Length: 337
Image (cartoon, rainbow, N blue to C red; front, side, top):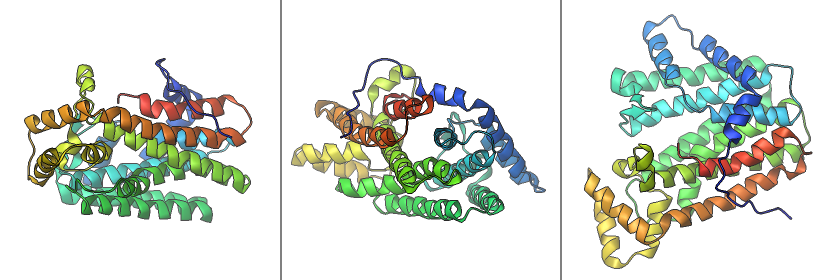
């Protein structure tokens, strides 16, 4: 029977530990991406370079490298190539996301669509995806090609489903989980499963890392959606309320709607039907979220997925890599960025 993970108040350094444990290969991932994004078209080079310079956590690439190391893959560069593929898919979806959401700021800088327009952003996002698939074909592993191809399709379906339910405060929690399973958890799943595939491990190890990646991704997205309504983060200078202003209905709003009275439900419905919401609107929603203890409820739900992800790794022998990946499940919830 699996163990239950208790969230501690200690600083969780697993992200930095994972980064350090694969730092040489992570440098190679960046080099591979830069190499693949070379183009004879100046605008493509400009936009690609700008996006790469904005940085990012590269969490999905780290999971690919860490899971590959956990499975005993040390010397080759196939994990590097596929980590680059995963990052390119993620980058492409961010470019497309910003067009859909009319995003203006990403990682503290102006979004690509804000500078170069929506048409160029969509096309450069497509260019990133085409380069990713080119790399997969070069490797020749059909199982990974199928995995990442189907993952790209799932991400698109998740985004469409979210768009379909924009502003729908009566959305079921089940629908929300389907959205985030597709648009976020699917790529985490793929990132984690690549390792045992390239090492040709038994199916039980593939299944274990598939479960790990999926549940880590669910935890990550629930945490992300909850952070967006956590007013305490203003103390750290973090901007909150992005989902609210974009009219996206996420777990905090779904759980809030289940608990409040009819007048309050009418108020929330009206807010999400508006074309634009204000800072004052957000302040009122956050007051309701606080008074109904919604943030804690979201974290409790996320803890369920933390336990599933962590317990998935029990099949592997004890190792430094296993410890880091287990601790990463809690980090995804405890982080404030």
